[in-house]
Image (cartoon, rainbow, N blue to C red):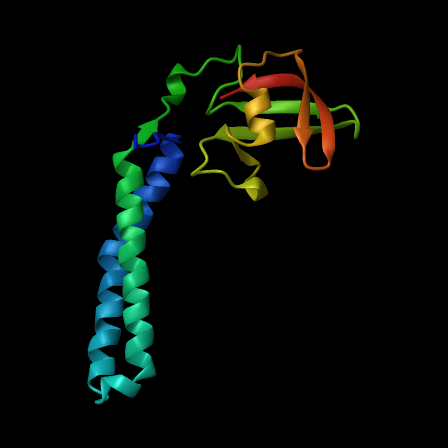
Length: 158
């Protein structure tokens, strides 16, 4: 099975690298110390602290493996090469929702970076996918779970 390429902005790459570094340097050491302390309590078969620390260790090691895999398969978008003529991954797009008569701003990012609370939407989401390759002035109808919405692209920046 071919590996799916992970698309990241430079900011997203840095966040993943920082998380990986923290897990490898800080969190591993903390959990190892908790395991060592829990072992000193004696009988491991009934030692909840030991079991909890071992479970956390397994979670951390799994997350480290996941992050290493993501970084190995990452393609970083060079934001200097982004144009403002069409929407692409890395673009910041202002759209007008015709139904609500409101303006929204979205940063189109790869799925690993998506965070709707920060207005970062995935290129694979219904809105993100519909906006890709659109130009200022384009009107797009987007199918969403609640029906459809009509948006007009009013500005593209990087």
